[in-house]
Image 1: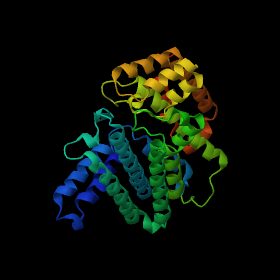
Image 2: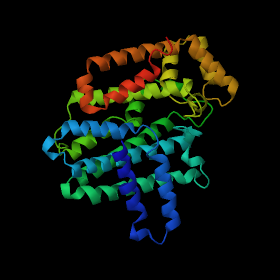
Image 3: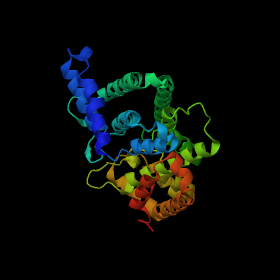
Image 4: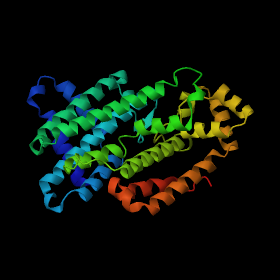
Length: 339
């Protein structure tokens, strides 16, 4: 991993700070350098690792030169930059305090809503990197198209969330269906599995081959469970300010509330209507107590156990589209914690 991180510093950051066209705005360059260093390399870099794992499985061994591996590292960091930017936007909209144990980027002095400009900068900077390093392979246009499509998906995800009116004190619970949740998960988690997989196909020059229905469905399934796990952690794993969770206060359409609504009696649903999406501690406690009453942690454990079994039985196919060791590690973190 040290070689991978060296490419981040010696290519991604160095290209930015040494750009002669930006020599007259050193303060702006310094701010974006700080922003990239804060948002991108801190964490497990799951998308980068997933991309590298898939690419090395797809690529012909004769093409795995040191130069091509470096290009893979560069493209992997481009993927992580998109993820870092989307996470920063989520934190702003969700009013989160911490991510990965660090203060959210928008909470830094002088940032606040300018984090939206940071996303625009990252998007355009990624396109510059792609054009500089991948045009000679004639895959710069397919890669840029893929990144643009990913931006669209992230925007669609935010629009879907707004469609249930989180900003009000009365989220539209009638829209909190299993079908809506699956659709939301698809668009929110495109950067987790599908995006790295498609990026690997581009670098291996296999982007013109249609993705099989089986692989696409596997991507959707992995993305959905990633969202389910994230929702559960938001409620039950706010440890040492690693990542502050406020889905209940914000009235989010999470797996927990969808499952609760599916199992609630009319009286319990009334409690949800009266207290879900309220920002006071009393309402949050009432909802969490209701989750316990409805055995939501137990239902999550069963869901996780089924997923773990499925991955174990289909590990070879999963390995072809994802970094399955990371998936197992993430499962181990929570597996059977709430039996």
